[in-house]
Length: 273
Image (cartoon, rainbow, N blue to C red; front, side):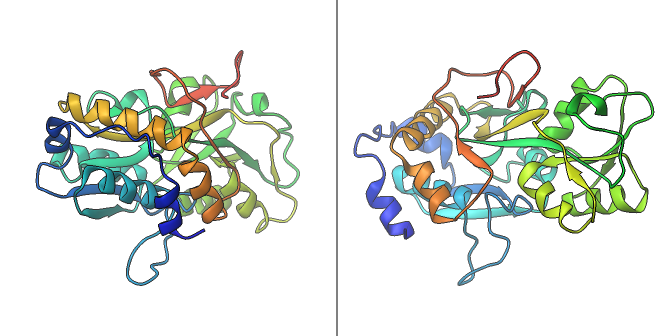
């Protein structure tokens, strides 16, 4: 399905844009959309025709179309840099995981998409379950400032995190330092496992990363319209069609939900879905 077809299939019931929301969301006259090019599930790293593509890009362009303003993509190579750039006013909306540590500066929509997060363990590892990871002496490689790093920082009690600046670097750290586990998004871990004979992606998940759209705090009308747009994009099938269009596996459309304080739902005691 082409992006033009996605536009035609987007909601006829899309909410009108209040002028104050438009001015808050695009104060420069254009919508600056922050994207994390490291997240291959949401953004195509390879440029086609000089532009990025992917689920996040489709949503960003559709949001700009609804606002009636041109879109400028602002690319970052890690989620941490994307989140930190809110301080400098580098973007108007951004696609990233909704995490409590980010909520003081970023007003998030509800999730539009969910991605399971889990662990990869090396060949011969005695670790068999997700619960086995959180034990004394277990060393876990993780991409610094990712949504799942922030979650594990709050929730791991005994295992120790070893941080690397990028997803690729976390894999390299896991291999070179012979660490006990690699934390990450499960679709990527499956790819990593193919490079390590005998390694295993553990069954289940420790969390589900809820991918949301954020705008800087202090834009109340803009944040309200952003929430309405996100729910509309899910209900209309726009998100599902974008997933199909880009042939992305290992993700699902997030269900309608009330405002949540966290972008990660633990599987301990409740379903993340």
